[in-house]
Image 1 (cartoon, rainbow, N blue to C red):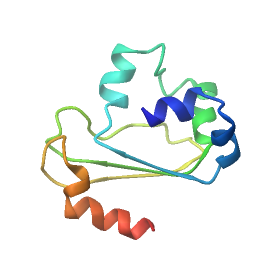
Image 2: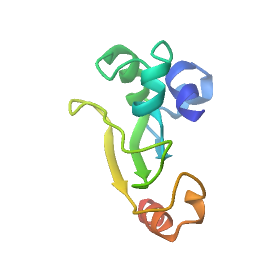
Image 3: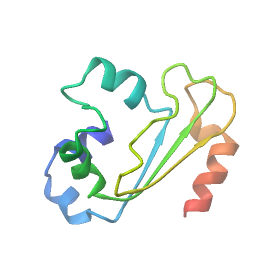
Image 4: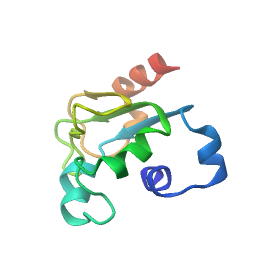
Length: 112
C-alpha cells in the first residue's frame, strides 16, 4: 500500500520528504505476484520511468523476506537502480508477524 502511494501519488508531503524516506518492505509480493498479475500498476523493472519516480523519493530501501513465505519472497529490482537497496532473508516463519520476529527487529534496530 505504501509502495502505491510513493510510486503513484504526488501528495505534497511525499514530494517534501523526497530523499528522506527509508522504505522497509517485508515479504513483498512485488516481483512474484504484482508484476505478474497487475502489470499496469506494477510494471516490469525495465520500465525505468515508473521505477525512477519511486527511487527518487527514497533514501534507502530495505527488503526482508522469509525463505518459506508463500506470498512474498526476494524481489529482483535491476542492478542499475539508483536507490540504496539491500534485502535480507531472515530464515523461516511464513508470511505474517514480521514485526514480532527478533531476527527482523535486529536488522531494523541497526537501521535506526
